[in-house]
Image (tube, rainbow, N blue to C red; front, side, top):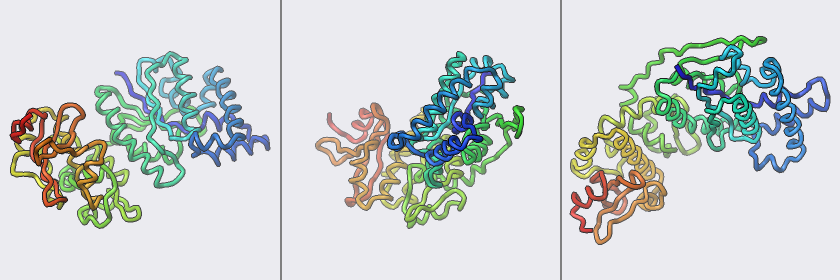
Length: 387
């Protein structure tokens, strides 16, 4: 069976090339640590570290051109891959590989070096992957980066690689990355590999039977859906009802914790595809008009369309919660683009870019009443709009 191997990428390809018996290179090590979270733009302002990194990249390339032991010593990530394939790296050619790296200059350099090496071995199914601003510069930035990666990973792993054996190679990467990806791997991976300290032998941890309490998740599905879109005011009482380890407070706002994101992304597809969630129950500025929308939702047979509809309603709810003038926010939003049909009092929201719309009316200047879901043709007919 083919594998998808997800490898966390750190900076070992650079740091492993430093001679710590040399005073000059001890300084190099200090500079690498100091600039580990620099973006590429910020790194351009530090010419001395650029020169150091170029020298270390040259050494790394030389090591990667050597024998197997040289290669394994050069890179923690490759040490894991060679262990996984029992030193026969050519066996990796049939598999797919995902390199998870931080949105930093050093992270990108190391990921590109690894990708280049793998392709030199005729391993061409390689996908470097990161989320914007993902770094270990601060707890908040790291948590946000991990949270943004979770839905991307779920889509890549569960949607595109069904039937594959999923392996998380956590030999490389920062310790914080390894810790979180170990938890993520317990949900998504079939196996997780590490290297025994002081050796090149891998240890394989099988997937543990983590069971999520879906009835409990369903109880908080609306809050989870709305907060999956983004932060909400701390004053929103329903967000405070979420279990404490599912949420976190940042100033005057609440957002999903990494665990909350993981739980929601594991249950989201199922909960969104079953029944139309009762968003108006806890969003005061949102209502459903009669049973029009419920009828359109029930008659939709395409699960993906049901899911995307509820994602967009959650986005509507989030904007109404976060903005005093929520209607203007919906008009300004590049995704929803609330617009009025000409010569009517009927508005519509984009559900998909080309095909699907959601008709609605503005009530009492600040409340949105959701009506029909479907194509423009369907909405024209139901709303009695003349073309």
